[in-house]
Image: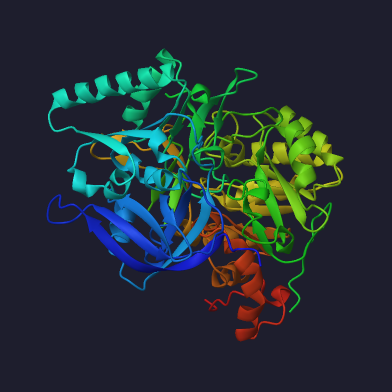
Length: 267
Length: 310
């Protein structure tokens, strides 16, 4: 039987990460398995707890960290009313989930691949590092503001070399930018592959260096989404078509969320 | 139970296998939802607004979530009529369900050209004329706010699409929706869909900036259902042509309310975003709910709102 793409799943547990005040802001959400046979790191799901009712209409797009026959794990940060409500989920609660959505990152076994993550942008790389057949070809630079233990870094650390840079004072940002430039330059000289995910200012910086050093790079974008299936045209980003050089808007949810940097026009 | 509906137009009637249509702009071109249900099971789907030429749409951010609703200012991004006819339409199950083209233009002349272009294509069951989009600079809701202009557009479309059922989509952003409804009926419209989105706004108090690049946008979702019900009731009470109810419908109970208010069919919009199976589920669940309520025909239910004698 064809697997259902939209399923009602059960919350198995919700594990807080780090202590950034009285209320934790970072969580791993573990759901019962949707029985999807295939998924690619970089893909995401739309998650809508039944508790949203009619009050919070949109599901929330969450990157897939892990998916197998036992469970689906997503990682999220509390940012607004939707994620705040999601953080109140209890074991046994029902959520509506549809996916896997989007395209996922390129995976080239033998290519030196540089993973660049900013903050929550680390989430898709958890799955990526685990699925990569030759993890010794992966290196990672992770920039973050809250403490490191707020993020799911352990499972990445087990498999690859990860450098982390925490921004606590303004000068740290210069260090991060400096490191990004060095790493991207090195990777371009090795004809490698750069994969980046993080907040827009982070991606803009990465994009600038990628263009400067002509690195092959993919950026994963985040955007507000209503549907996740390409219909609402709300999550669009400006893309330059390779053949015609014409600019137009494309859906981040179905044409992305991963785009080749050379196609992106970041505004 | 037989859910079949005939929209008896003054020029052309439109046969629907059930009263559940999907609203323009919330269901893409149908294919986006084919992984979540059987498109052919729907009464029909109304495709994303088409214009004669491709349109890029508005700057981003274009959408924002609000309480029990959302605002959008997409600005009718679409690939244009030619692309739709040659590339998109062949992939749609037009043999099995009604494919309705929602059309937008910036002038009466352009409406006429677009209507003429689509008229001869047998794969399109009907045209829904968008005179109510709040998110475009030219035309849009302006056409829908003046009875004379609304009638002029309707007349032009009817004249240039002589083979098509013409449905006109009204805006709630007017003083008297009944006057607009009567004007488009007199101009030849076969049916009226209402309502399009309500103009709204969202502000981020921290940045003191509007949350939409377009500043204002169109409000949709469960929050607008009472307004939509009121409009459907008012319009259905003032015209003879069929009314299609749109606005915040999330379940079969909502559908029955709209039919009681006078709607012959309904369009499901924002609910498609809340659950991609929503429209398909409603088609499936409607007969059961009718049975539970002792409703044997939708025709008998239509306009059956009970009012006390004053």
